[in-house]
Image (cartoon, rainbow, N blue to C red; front, side, top):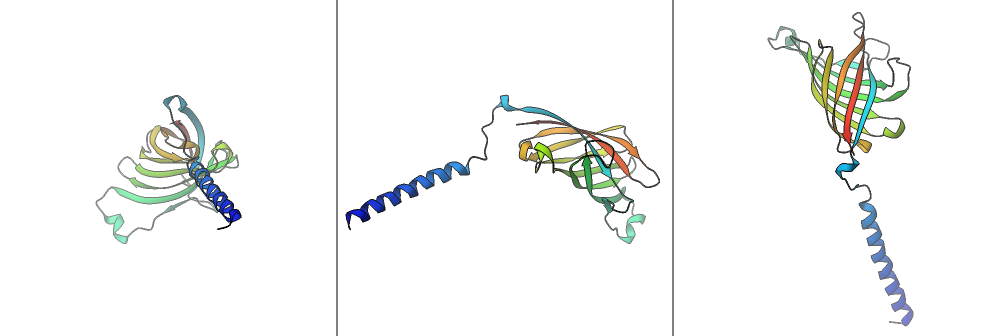
Amino acid sequence: MAHSDIIFFNLFQFFCFFNILITAKSETLFVRKLSPSLKKLTHLSLYLHDILTAQHPTVAIVPQAASTNQSQSSFIAVVVFDDPLTMSPDPSSRLVGRAHGVYVLSLPDLSLTATINLAFTKGEDNRSTLSVLGQSRNLARLRELTVVGGTGVFQLVRGYIQVSTYSYDAKTKNAVLKYDVYLQHY
């Protein structure tokens, strides 16, 4: 092997090894070192617009079997939704994300069991999500749902949401819900 080939081969090995080190380091850059002192407390005040009857509804009742209405069970409906989240109760106010989810509505207290993902699309929370589970008794003035996880800026989140009805139109069945979100995250 010629002297220049040996030098080239050694340089090639060095750059391959260096590239492996750089790649290994960069693959772990998305992981943050966590310590209890890095925890943040965040309060978000959001409005969810539940639109059942309009030109562009955001809520749909899942089709039911014909026997559902004659059933002895206390379940009324399964509902899916893709509701806008805004900063104020005005539907034309700044859109900050969407609430996607499913809930099961049941009697006698019109409670619902909900699975919700709050997907943020604006600001520093853009592309972050919160995963929410819980039971909400719709006849209560103030309800609570549990925040069980999150992504993006809400990694390792935990918290809760206080839900209240800001407005409800009995004729159209459209509602605006206020979500006071309290979070502890890194």
